[in-house]
Amino acid sequence: MKRIKAIYPGSFDPPTNGHLDLIERGSKIFDELVVAILRNPEKDPLFSVPDRRKMLEAMTAGLENVSVDTFDGLTVDYALRVEASVLLRGIRAISDYEYELQMALMNRKLQPGLETIFMMPAEKYSYLSSRLVREVAQLGGSIDCLVPELVAQKLREKMDVAHKFEDGTSPGGKMVSKPKVPFERKSKSRKKKV
Ligand code: PNS
Image 1 (cartoon, rainbow, N blue to C red):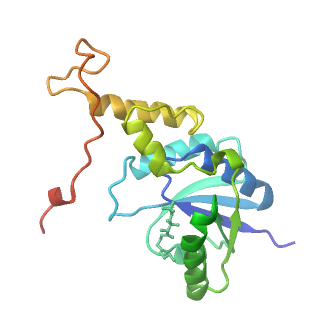
Image 2 (cartoon, protein in one colour; image 1 turned 90 degrees about the vertical axis):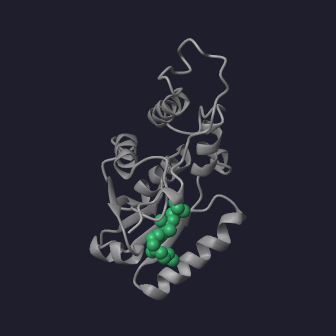
């Protein structure tokens, strides 16, 4: 009998409970599911690719047929390399549909043998995105129930670093009244000139 191998590509910056929900659903349907993190040098991510990989590996440790990998270049080329016949993507709301449809049709044009399958995460995650998690965490809001505890912990660690004052004191230290500041992100202008 034909075994079906699927890839679930994405940025996962950071992975959320919505991603995990989709991974669990996918693992029940496909024989093998590879969560594939895009290595995108154009983006300025909050978490490094190795950090995201570690988080996803820990989150999926209990799922025997799920593995985590990284890739760059075209998703369809990666799928071909790992001999996957399905590309799994999540659709949360109608607003996702247009972008996902475009991507699915472009991927089909590039590689007709690769079938995109959309799945819906649980309703309670329909508003959840990595971008919003990053923003809420950066502005000091609660991210409980939005991400697994190990991801929340990593976000808190990032926050502590970002909130460290120039003299090295942290928000947990003596100058607690100092207002929280969002993460400092590397600006594009600081890119190495070649
Ligand atoms: O989690 P994201 O950011 O929505 O994932 C988007 C992703 C990684 C699936 C998409 O950007 C992608 O496939 N990038 C790889 C480059 C590629 O294949 N581009 C053509 C897509 S039609």
